[in-house]
Image (cartoon, rainbow, N blue to C red; front, side, top):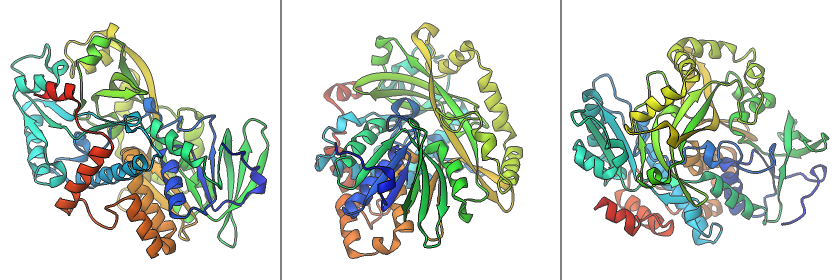
Length: 509
């Protein structure tokens, strides 16, 4: 590893704030597009990927809309809306393309360290929910990105897929499930560390841990002067850069506010914390091999969609259930309880109050979640695993998310469940707000950022050619081109080693 230069001696072309999957993805894309770029990365904690990208703070679902029911809402006429699901499925395919490039070029040498094949399933009970799931299945399978999805309302078949979910269930209960064998489990923490390890070997890239960005000043020439505090020495230094990316997870909103760009006015944030039940019984863990998502409770945020979830974290198989939502005024797991009150400004108080009025069911839901007893949490788990016993599970803290609140002409303010990119008019600064499906669609999001903030370079033949090397489908639509999507999936499945193992094939048979 090279010796890092002192902050006051550098004027990087790019500053990345936050050492998570978004900054890692943007950093490596820009370095591949222009190897001469100098990049400085600042992270307030003592290690990379310690917040939202960490394996225990992130659901790890390769969000491709195969199993997440909140991406396919049912409309008033009873039909199911699938446009968002198609967009997310396409974006995840793009992410897999770039990760395959990393593997083929020995930047990520062992794909099993960050991505594995895990079937994605949806499971529901009750006649109305079963009717919805069947309509969802019929709508999705008309599109080629969901080819291979299976549907069953046969309890015996579902038991073969996920025995824990059917073991001890009332045989008269009406149930249904869908299964997509193309699903994945992604350790975004491991992937992020791999990318940063590579970036640190590149000339002109400097990663500063225990360094917190304090303030911004937009200069007359369009560049930014940034104040950075060394949290070990408590000394603040300044540097100048033409471009800043704020990818600090829940910490992005306060930094966006400090930047003062007009485009950031009116944004607020609503923090939501989470907890998992983690199985401590190896026999139970081995009996489950799927990510099984259900329907969210009325008024709950999307990050609270319940799922019984097979994970592989640092090579060890785990089984999680949750997340159970909660409320904290912190914007980061390692944040301050003053984060929320400090974020309230004159320009966003109206949208925040309006969003609060329109989301009273969410407030009630969060209060109920905070008040849950261990018995309440076990009862929720038993909906998905009827034979669950309290002694087989332990409660662990999950990550902290900040849902975006933005101005709305009609409502005054609305709560956005997704990812929002805010860019300065001159392209000199960009900030990423929001949560799921962020990490899974990081490559598509960063490609959009590049075309917004580096639009002149992105329009050149050189950058277009390089982007096609990084992402072979670049410039084409996987959602519209059936043959290209099939070819791309075949390639990424092979490179990322996502074919079911022999053991899994025996189980499926």
